Image (cartoon, rainbow, N blue to C red; front, side, top):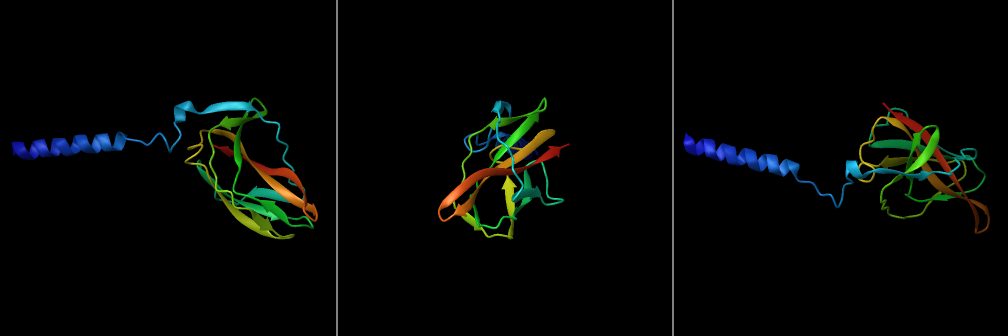
Length: 157
């Protein structure tokens, strides 16, 4: 009986210690997230838009619809930024972001669902108002592109 109790106690200690280990080199530490500089990004959803797909928002991800209503092809990649609204102004969130950088085309009149999962970069978001911003390049003439930002606001309750 005493031997079983010791074995159970050892298993309990191992289980507790295993649950407390975390890889701080991969996941961000919630306590070190800092609000960065004020953002000067202007969102322009006139000819290309980015909007939330209804029912997909959580505190660590969202699915969005990128829609190209322009007369030309657009180019985009996987990068995006998340900003937070404080006292009526937008601020960058200081984190190190790493993305794959394939380049994607979206033809005139086409739409594409985009998955944004910020759990490993920004972590679970606290209550607040946020926005996702994404750079888009619009082909004006052969090999001449105009870059602008699309995005949307959302609230975590």
